[in-house]
Image (cartoon, rainbow, N blue to C red; front, side, top):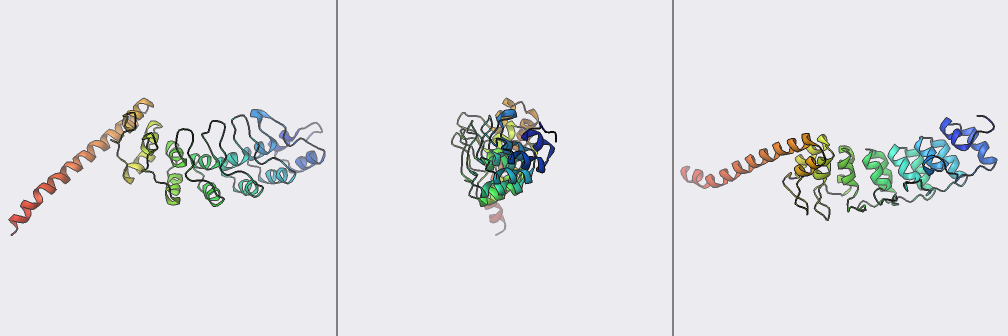
Length: 250
């Protein structure tokens, strides 16, 4: 590193020695770089676990936010950087903080990026499974929207129900449909979600897929509706004819 290099250059280069030297020389740990990110946020984004620890030890604010309100823990969770997450949590990082839009928490960041191990760390540290964003959606809806099947399964095991609709009637199937997440649609339908269910606005997953510009998802769900209605018709017929079949066997 050159003499005039700043702390962000050192982080980008992964130069721990330069970081320590800059900190020792009085570098501003809350300096703002690109996107109003602090050095700690940049280190989390770059996956620089040792630098994260060094900055925390030097007194960096573990709950600092960048221009969208994301914290170092949110960034580390999205990256699946367990070492950085553990250091941040041990230093008092808030596991339930929201971004500025009221959309994301560390847990939903991890869920949206399919970081199952990061989710486990956050839940063990007290992350609120039931936390809802400004749309009334919790982390399982984020996993569904991003097509993260394994993350959704883990949240289901932890106690969230993928069949439970939001207050406005939105289901995990609907958000997966409008985002065109085919693997997620397959899993959710097999789990028992009905494509015919509608939200409070009267829209089904099929209609929300069309509105989201996902015709493949809409067509796939329409086929599933036909399959389900055929199955229900056959089941109803069996129930109606069963007494007569029993009578003939007497």
